[in-house]
Image 1 (cartoon, rainbow, N blue to C red):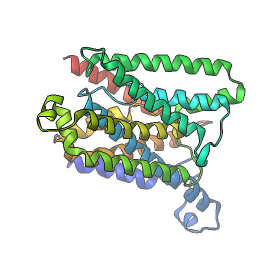
Image 2 (image 1 turned 180 degrees about the vertical axis):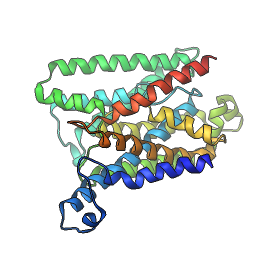
Image 3 (image 1 turned 135 degrees about the vertical axis):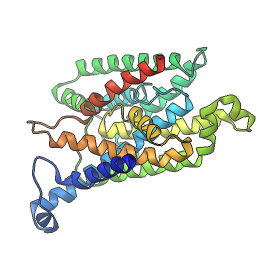
Image 4 (image 1 turned 45 degrees about the horizontal axis):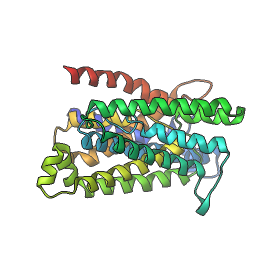
Length: 320
């Protein structure tokens, strides 16, 4: 019964979320396509809710993937510095004033993706020198990289002008505020691609979650599988961060909540984790839009307020 109530609550929030915001909307006005309420609903609210849903899927599945591959409950792209690498890459593009590059690709998106990918390869390279690379040592290495990236971003902030600095501040806080359907379609494609790849590698991921030795005994090429999964996850996170900025702790919270509700193998939790992550981020975004403040509260602040205490709880429980 409790499972039903949880899913009913999240789905209900997803349905009513487009009607919540600074401008109240009525169903009759929304269905009249000549009204301003209809334009707000279909061009602002609905695309934003879908973008939040797809972003939640990407973050939740990436968290599940990192926690499984590294066999550590605290591992996520956010805690390992992958998101910070994407932010630094996007910040460099903003500082250089780069716009659209070849084939219509945004420089911010490209640099954010490159920052995430380079961070993953740097982690894999440095892990060779760690005796306990799969656990605390690698986590500390990711935290160190995050601090380094933050310092580099502060240098960019110091050298930038007022307009660039304003863009950087808003970017680093995370935002789901969009106009139109371009970003939801991009996020939807990436979320679908990430879900498909993880589901295709579900049996390999199950073996890797136990140990590399068990996977090798089953004839699995562990290095190839790990690199493919990390590459697609980094591509997804890097692209998302380049659009929305960093949104932390969703990838940390969601897999643990789903595991608590459904204590089963990873094969059975892939789609549940994806859906829960999407609905959870829509819930957080609904909170930001429902608060009566002069300006919208960044989504990264809300997820950090929820995820920070949860992160402390996981550390304490792990030590016990």
